[in-house]
Length: 161
Figure 1 (cartoon, rainbow, N blue to C red):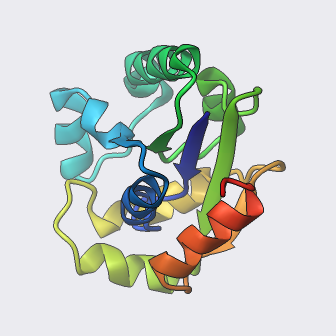
Figure 2 (cartoon, rainbow, N blue to C red; figure 1 turned 180 degrees about the horizontal axis):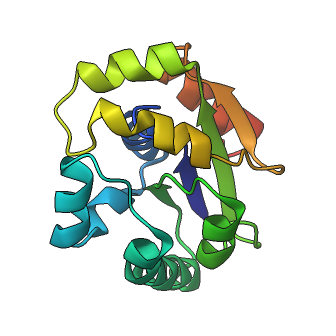
C-alpha cells in the first residue's frame, strides 16, 4: 500500500509523513527529492512550475508508485498532488493507494513557510492555493492539530493498526 500525503507546500506533508512511516515501521519518501535541479531552481526563484515542468517528475513518481505497489509493502509518500489531473497521472485513486489531504488556513501555512528553510518560498503559496483542487475521495485532516494527533487519526481512519 502507498499512503500519499498531499497538500500545499507548508502543510506538513513531510513532518506527518515521516512520523507516520515511523509509527508504521515502513519507508518514507518525499516527492520533492525527485525534482530536477532546474525545477528546484525555478521554484527557489519564486516561479511556479508549469505542467510541462512537472511532466518528467510525475512520470518518475508514477513509476516509483507502480514499483512500490508491486513490492506489496507499505510506503508513505509526501507529494503536493494539488490537482485532479496530477493525482490521475500518479494513479492516486486506484487500489493500493490511500490519499491523505492535509488542509489548513492560508495564514497558518504561510507562517510555517516563513519559519522553515526550504526551496519553496512563501511567495508561491498563493499560486499553490489557486491551483489546489481538493480531492473528493481522501482522508482530509486539519493541520491545526499536532502531527502526533494527525498520525493517530490516519492510522485509525485508514484502519492501519
